[in-house]
Length: 359
Image (tube, rainbow, N blue to C red; front, side, top):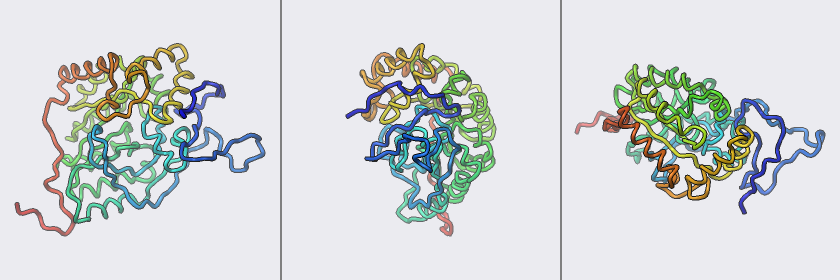
């Protein structure tokens, strides 16, 4: 039975967080509820500091079976993301770890400390036939945790050593720390970077993506990476009717002017617990237009706010989503995005100690 959406929670708004509560984990039969102040000694306050939970993972690279996400394999050194983007589809994955997709996703970050070693072991497997790997396909590999743990940097160093190509997506300017490494990889066509930009409206950005860098800084990322010879593009995702879809042209124009050569987009979809989290956030932040936005999202998914069908779920269907798709195609042509045929190069993959390929 689907969980009912309500707006009964009128507590003080938690600044610096996207989600405002922890929806129930669908995999857990029991949940901890605070009924009296003195009843639970280890109770964690809703807006407590972010906690890093170090994990000795058994694996890193995962095969992606979804045919409409543009990747074959992905690797994620972090689970959970402090950026707190309210719409993030990765929130639901946190439930598999025993946490909530809400506040837990933003404040309980699982750190795979042995990620670089796991990647090296994976690439040394003789059965691995080189294809590009997405870094990350789930949470942002340059989220604030990266500044402390540097797992993404070490993963890139392994990829550079093996000539293993990677496709990256981020909305954090922290990626510029690794410009020289990315530049070296780019010379061998081993890396491609998508920078996510959803809005130039700072009020919207702070509410929707509370712990992320500004759109201006993300344009700087595109510009500096492009100037360094790294192929950079812009991800417009998600486009939300009534909130940010009208900014599509401005974002694509600015990204192109700063050196972006390709683009991608998604239409908002609210699967699993994200439906509850987003609904609560929407009505608290935009009560004047919440009904309109919610109904526009429904109109983009055949009367629902989510669609799990491959080939449809990422683009939506109906007049609203069709209009967004038409605009995307139009502005791609105008600003010459996706005009070139370009692929990451897998031909030079080698394991340390192996001789170069003769043919």
